[in-house]
Structure formats: structure tokens, C-alpha cells
Image (cartoon, rainbow, N blue to C red; front, top):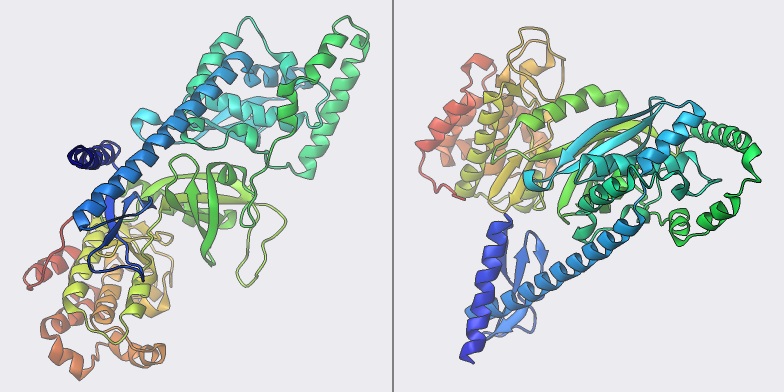
Length: 543
């Protein structure tokens, strides 16, 4: 029994060490069921939002230890499975690797096509980067490949392009392999690029590339005719029987019968290749937002898809997110350009035609937004909690302004909960630079929370201070009904606060009146608000 207890607590230590080394969040979650009794405790281990099998014990300490054993054993089994999978892939590529870059170059040379490779992005920690390269044929994108080496990413992109151009293929893919100059080199590079498959995800053989447009289909057909004609004279060559055997090889059959991952929300090749469990969680004039799980690390992400016509806003948002790194700002991961179906505002169905889009991958905040929090606390005053959360919002705004940016659309829907006590500001679709003396776009923002001067073309970062006054008022006394809010809101924007509120929240009323000043110069800066809040007694949440 004593040895068993030692093993249990050893598992807790190993689990803790594993999470620290891999920067994972570890949580022991209490599970309450109808069958729970006062002398039994049920606990489940949660690692980075993945919940493992629960365990029951006579004490909470015992339940945690047992849950740690179950979680640790599961993690070890997963590691073993990933290692076995990696070894299988390594053995496969060692004996069957194909230099698709060479294949495509030979094909392009025959048909007078220009081949280029363009770096799209890279993601992952510095010690385990994943590179993404696009293959361009005559300046048209034919596929985006990924790998832990640039050479592997280019080879996968070349594979996608080659298969599109030769579908239905008249020759086997192996025919253009150069066994002397490139096969050994590509074997090692492809093996090195298989760490993504070793994560338990599907390989590139499990995905069918995105279908080309009619124009590309006609182009590919024309290329096939040219190739067929040019090879007519060699039909009776001695090597013809060898070619037939090659076309019937198991490897060729695997390439010809690829599986397809599909989604009703997207047809974008990279989106489908890198993510699964795709769900739409928001839409508007800007585009759509999806929740999706990354194939490699199994983390939930938010993917924002913006129509090409709005890429100026999208590019501005990406540039802003890429330079922001703060505790109270939603984290940016990467982005890419691509074609996809698109659901326009006011319609319930997506288009069948594909449009150019910008995709932005960001941190997903599972606990909802401030609007949800206000709905959950209707008619309830939570002063201490409200002040703590509000201070986090202001810290985020202060950082945004320190980076010479203006958010321009601060509102409860754009303020998210990373967890129950941790606020993050998101949606930088309307962000703009703060130090320009030129005219700005008028009426950018949400009318309900927009500063008075934001309807014109001349304003500065103080437009972000005005909505903070409205948000603070709403957090201190969430409206019981939407009708009540609509009735009182115009008065509040004019600084006509209810008498009951001003008596109950004397200090907060003084601050709100400053924030809602019609004259921007009379509003304090975000840093000034933080100084005021520090003088007010409340419990500061720490992390």
C-alpha cells in the first residue's frame, strides 16, 4: 500500500514536471455528480484544457493522486503511439521518398512553365519550427506545403502542384525521380520533416488538394495533350513495360486514392490540412470567425476569415497583432492568404464560388466575452470583481496606446475571458496608428460605445477612453433587461447617471464622469486611470 502511494505521488511529480517543461497548464478539476457523497471526492486532471479520466478517493488528496496516475499513463501511451507512428513514417520515407521538386522541374521544363516557391509563414517554438511554402506555376498558386525543414515544405508544395497538373496522370510519379543526385538527400530531408506526422496527425497522403478552377483544369488538360504528343514516338521503347509496372505500384495507388477532409464552413486547403473540429462562432461585415483544433498540437484556436475586399483592414489587424505581446491582449499566432467559399452578411448559405481571403489564427478564449459576463450578472452589483476586471482592461488599453495604436472598437463583445479572472482585449479589425496628424476614417466603431468625436475625421487615442466609462458603469450595475439599457443608455452617454448609482458608487462616479467627458482633452489617459484605480481599495488579482 505504501509503495502504491509512493507511485501515485511520483506520478503527480512527473506530471507537474512534464507540464512545466512543455509550458502546459495543469489543473486538478473537482467533479461533482448526483452520486457524490460527503466521504468521496472525484477529481480529473486537465492539461491545457484537455480533461483526462476522473478518479475517486476518500480524500481530495487521494483522488488527485489517482487522477494523476490515470493522466500520466494516458500521456505515456500517447507518446509511445506517436513514436511508433514516427518510426513507421521514417521507414516508409527512407525506402520510398520522392523528389517532387525534381519531378515538377522536369515537367515544367517540358511544358515551358515557370516554377517558383514562396515562403508563406512559419509557426511553432524556435526549437521545432514548421515552415509553410507555396508552389507557384506561372505566378498562380498550386499548393502550400509544410514541414520542419524548408526543403521538406517545398517538396510537399511541389507534390501538390505536380498532382494537380497531372490529374488524371498519364505517367507514374516515380518516373521522374533522379535516383543518383537527389534521392538520398531528399530521404533525409523528408524524414526530418515528418515531426508533424509524429504528433498523431494525418499525413499529407490523407488530404486531397483543393480543386483548381476551370481555367487551371483546361490548362492542365492542354499540358497533358502536349506531353502525350511529345512522348508519342517513344511508345514502343524498351522501357514501356517497366513504366507500366511502375504505374501499378502500391505507392502510385496510394497517391491516386487520397482521402479528403471536408467541412461545410471552408474549402480552403491549408485550413482543412492544419485544423479539424471547425465550428463557426461569429460573423459580420468583416467576415467569419471559427473555432478550430490544430492538427499538430491539438490546441483550440480562433481563425478569422476576411474577404479580400477588406484586406486593408485585415492587413492592418495582422500587423497590429504581430507587434502586441501582453497579458491582457489576445495572442496572435500567424496568418495566410488563400481562396475560400464565403458567407456574405444577410445570407444563411455560403457561396459555391471561391474568393480571395485572409486567414488570421489567434488565441481562443473559451470563457466567453464580457457581454456574456454582463448577461450572467444581470441586476447584480459585483463592485470588487468589476473593478479588478476593469483594471485589467485598462492595462490592456494602456499597452495598446504605448505601442502607438488606437483600438477604436472597445466594447464588451471584444473583451474576452481567458479564464474566470483573466481579461484579454481582442478584435483589432479597426485598429489604427496613433501618431498621425492626418485625417482618419469617420464613424469607425460601434455606435453604442463610440466617442462623440469619432463621428468626425480628427481624433486621437482618447476615443478609446470614452467607451471605458460606459463599460465601467455597465460592469458595476449590469442592466436587468435590454429594454432598460436602451432607455438609460443615451442619458449615461450624456453623463446623466442615475441618482441611486451615484450614491452607491461615489468614487467610481467621479471617474466615470471624467471618462465620459465630451471634450477629449478632459479625459484621463489609460495610465492616468490606472493611477486613480490604485488609490481605491480593492483586491488585486495576481497570476
